[in-house]
Image (tube, rainbow, N blue to C red; front, side):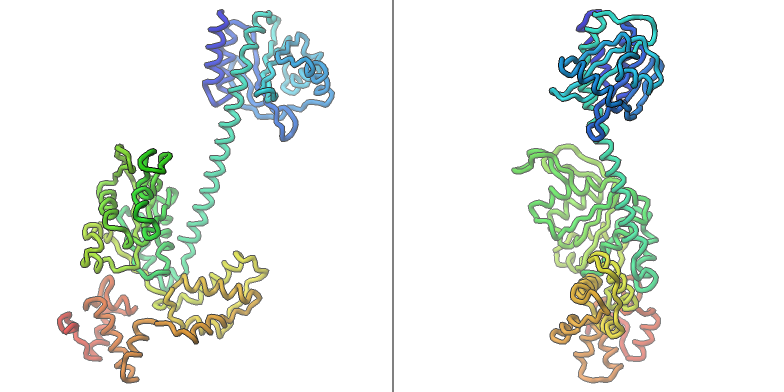
Length: 518
């Protein structure tokens, strides 16, 4: 056979498959048409253990990935260095391989009887990286023409070996990444789904709604003050859904400069604008098959709201500077601490986007409205922050401090409680926790407190019924006279609607909206 044709056809097989055992088998199958090779081994030098590792084996029947360290004695290594190292010989033909230490140990390890053996030493630059061992088991002999033809394959084998090692490293890193991702998903599920403090008490109604909507595809709008844990509830919805093993991508709409919103949300093509040196996937594209959490949706500029509406309606978009329309399969969860309905009336938020997002609203009550959760939350933060701060033990909360935590109105909600606990642990790591600095702060700066507190202060009388009446009127004005249902006064006050009506009758508060706002 023509040497050029042999080299070309063999190289196609050597470098044509990243699964090195298949490449080796295909190559042996081709070589055997003209050269009597029975078995082939591919080896590489493992610097980490200063030994040869047999990577793959091919026979007439199949290719096999082995990946075994080949034990070679010091005596065999010395013989190879003395006999071949000084000459720089890279093609070694052994007609009596069992009389040579290195070959004999290799054949004995693999339980093979050979009549002759051809060794191609592989190099990268001048650095030895491995070898191809070609074995004859029958009575046929290699001619010089055979040896010359096979010696041409050193470079293709060296390239294939290098490519395989890089491929294996990429595969290993991918497996590590997948394992880390699985672990992080489990941790996030534990934090966001399984251990929500107050799920059975102050947040019971919220969690009931989470269970109702989790496995649906409907958009969810989370409403509540800053710091109540809207992100945690969003995570709970995602990790309780059938998308839990897919991406959960968060976008803080208020933290992205207006000039970068399109690029961040939808990505861009290379060269789309100055500085776009490569293609970039946006948050929507990264969330495909999973959930996109749009936090602080009320901060999104009007122009960005238009583009967002199209994605929500059609589930498709284009990257900035791109012409290709990309399809999406995502679940949208939005959150806000602003009154979007009021923003719509003031033309600050698009009405059509508001209707699209407000399919299933969930109101998350402030911490002052669920005082039953405060001590449990405080204890949780003490335990978790003690681990984070590497304290020797988890300090106790004193009884005086517990009363202090319950009496405060927490305008910063759960986030404020978390920060107060962390500050106290830094100041007083040994315990018991007294929150003296917190108490001092309250002395100098009285918190604004709840609407009930403000109504009581505004009242000119100390009569309890008068204070209660003022507070109910304040809440009714906030709800535009709505008593029962989602966002009604009864829900905000945390009581049954019939109980509220009885209380209003007793206090002489009228029902009708027109009477309330005269």
